[in-house]
Image (cartoon, rainbow, N blue to C red):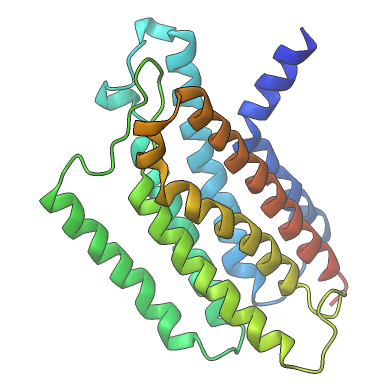
Length: 237
């Protein structure tokens, strides 16, 4: 019984984890400019993840007679695609505000990424569909791997710039560093998960693939906690 409850709570972590930084945001109302893209990211992804998990739950419980996620109107794949692009868009905006020499690049990369996605969809319309046989599970491995790689580049560039400065980085004097730290952990692991996901699908058991998705959700919780710490440290500024 307890295991089942824990499993249900963890399955919805993509939703409730976002409430941690959102609570800090709503209670303390930090005012710095860099918080604007982070705030939009949190609210946008909360909406998208609600759609993702609701559709997943409907399929799992076979509500309304729906038991096959291949039905277009009960396929949450498009929301994963939008989630990935939203993360790249808002964090590109975030990094463009950090004065680390990435302002122009952070404007170009999301546009180039969107263009590449449109071209890929046009050439291979089913290229982002992924189905684990025997379960209701879709991801967009190529899209997510590319997005994670680009964000990881931002994070490493930012970290290199900050470490070269004679400033404390793990204190309240630099709250954005917490956001970047959480994003670095999230993208560095997920980049390899999604880069090799199709290979793992053909070589390993389905349970292993589902375990990697649990790892993804755990990393997302860490990201949300790090964002919350950054927002909290900004509360009095």
